[in-house]
Image (cartoon, rainbow, N blue to C red):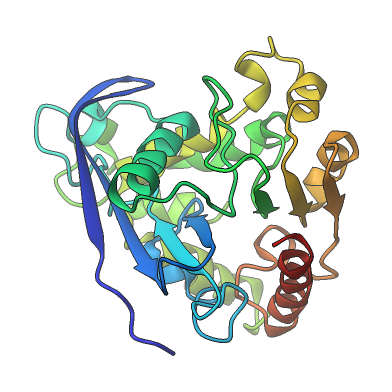
Length: 299
C-alpha cells in the first residue's frame, strides 16, 4: 500500500448550515495521486473516517491512484471535519447546529474548485439549491443513497437507545456515554450472535463521540432529495438527475428504475446493509469488478 497522505483542513468563516452558522467550518480531506489525472471524489459514509476508505483507494485498487486523482472527504460531524466534539463553545456538544448533505456538498465543492483548482471531476454532486455540478457528464458510483422514507424507523431505534441512556445526560456528558453507545451499536465470523454484537457493533461505536453520531444521524435522516425543489415528489427529483450511475443496495432498485442513466447491480451477500464495505473479501471483489468495469466504460 502506498503511503497515506497527510490530512488537510479547509476553513470557511461564517459558514451557513441547516441549523444556523458555524463561525469557522473545517473540512478535513486527503488527496491521492497525480492532480493531472481524472478526479474522483470519495466522501466518508455514516460511521466512517478518512482511514476507513482505503479498501477502495490505492495503487491497483478500484480507485487506482496511478490512474485517478482521488480526493477523500470527511463528512461534517465525523470527528475530523467540524463536529460537536471538536468545535469550541458556544457551538460545541449538543449546541452544534444540524448539518445537511447540501452543507457538506457546498464545503467539498469549495475545496475542489477553490483549493485544488479542479474544474472537471468524475463524481457529480446534486447541489440541492441549484443542481450545480463540477462536470455535467460526470459519473456516480452509489452505495449509500437509500430512500430515507424506508430508513426512518431504523434510525429512530438506535437514536432512542442512545439519548435515553442514563449516562447520555441530554448531551452534556463529561465522559463518553458508554452505556448509551453500547445500546446504540446493537441496532459471521464469530461463534455466536452475542460475540458478534460485542466485537463488531458495540466496540465499533465506543470510539465515537455520542453527539457526533447523533448529528451525523440527522444528516442521514434528512437526506431526501425530493424535499428540495421537488415538493416531495421523489420520481420528479430522480428523473432530473442526468448523471450516469451504478447502484448496489437493494433499497435502490426503485430509484434506479426511475433514474434515466443508471443501472442496478445486486451484491449476493449475507452481510446485508454492510455488504461491500470491506468486511467480506467476496463482496469486496464483486464490488471491485463491477465498479472497475463501470469506470472503464464511462471515463
